[in-house]
Image 1 (cartoon, rainbow, N blue to C red):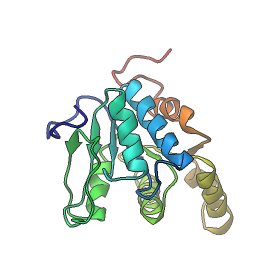
Image 2: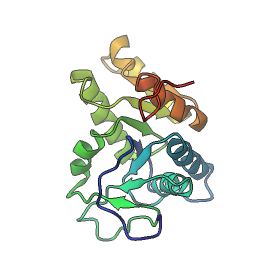
Image 3: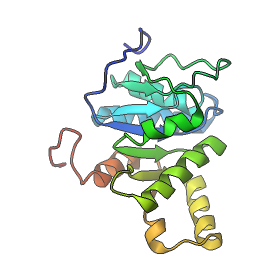
Image 4: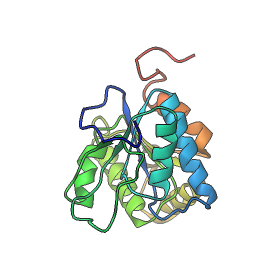
Length: 196
């Protein structure tokens, strides 16, 4: 299972990508947020995809794996100094950070937790792609107060309108992630059944 040999088989469950930090340590409260997000997504019937390394990526992977979910990692071949986390059940190797973007775009939704420059870059590219082609780019859900501050700064300092802002949905905390994904998918469960 989680600690066994990673599978190369495609997922049968809808995949939610989680964009987050590699630097958050287990003693940081944000690590527990990642575990909870991974657990709730797996319990809701989703496979979970992260970059596959440590920090919050490990936390999300751990939460999903401990809940019996599939965990997909996107390790980068050239990053030989980094080891994928032990909770990954399937690896999709990519050649670069940018090489992750098309794989992430295949997810049914992308969820962003607290992160650094890499997380911000993934959010910005996804958001820009949704602005240009929202029919093929997954819904983007931003979680937590840091993203609220960033959205406020974007609204106040960039050339952007209400339609653009609406392309990235903000939610306050981890308990809202699975319901927000369901809402973005048309309020149905991953197997297509109506929720509730």
